[in-house]
Length: 376
Image (cartoon, rainbow, N blue to C red; front, side, top):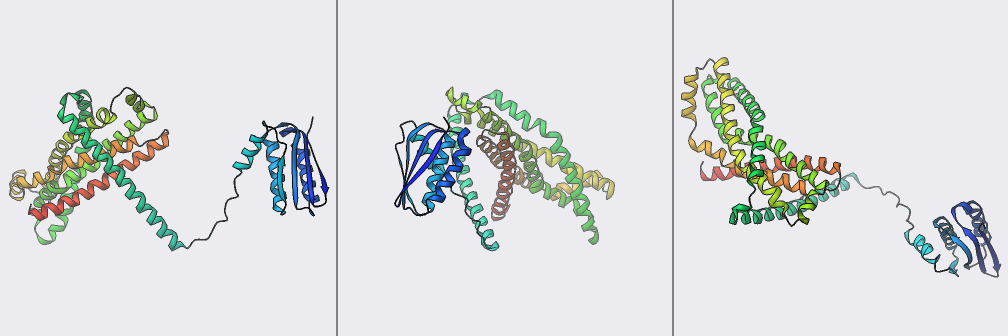
């Protein structure tokens, strides 16, 4: 039977009787009856809604009864339900519990206050991210210590594979970029030094800048964009496919399986790439000096030998393992943070590159201060 909603006024009390089916199909007629009851309750101060004769009740019917209660309460009337069966009472209570309040009216915020608030929130987020990254750094060191104590735990096949991916496969792009940077440095340096008739010192500029800073810094940035992002994407895809959960289920340590081989491979690869980048940059600058400045190759080599020292070379190369550690750690950390969506993989891969390059530049600045303090 269809539902009915009737009311009787006794003095200042309203008695509401619900009967029949309070379901979605009967909602239109019940909605009309609800409005009539609310209009007729203008002189009462309390109301009782009796549910003893309700046969069927679904979410739509429970919502209608709750709206009736809210309308009466809004008029200052005290409302109580009575006679709800054990089947109907939980549904009605749940509808009353989960009703969402209307969204608050937007408050105008001063633009300066908003900028300061966003800056503060960004600072707190950065500090929190730094704390989690430092915690991951500690976990990596513990895992490295365990592998050092038991070398058989190192997976040589995985290490060799990642060494090939991060070193051999990166030679073309690192070599090309370094060669072009050498050409640019020589060309720009010659243009400025020609004003003083000192074009020969272009070789000094090229050698010192490439060996101390440009070679390793440029290589680290390229590796961060190439290998660091690959680490994040690979581990993140495994996280999405629940392969890392499967490793843990088998009693295997994901850091030992996934992080350590990538970390060690990159720490070996980056010094080799830095040495290769130095050679390619010097070659590019040498060809520029030969064809533009008409400096013979023998004179170029002689002047370069006078300008540079072994210490300059080692100042650049000694940074490589540190940069490699930072890049690999951030790449693996962001990969392990991926949640179950492709969007998360893309977002954290981008974040991995940005954070890696930021840490590389910061650490390079710290190295510069340290070497200056040591007189190197």
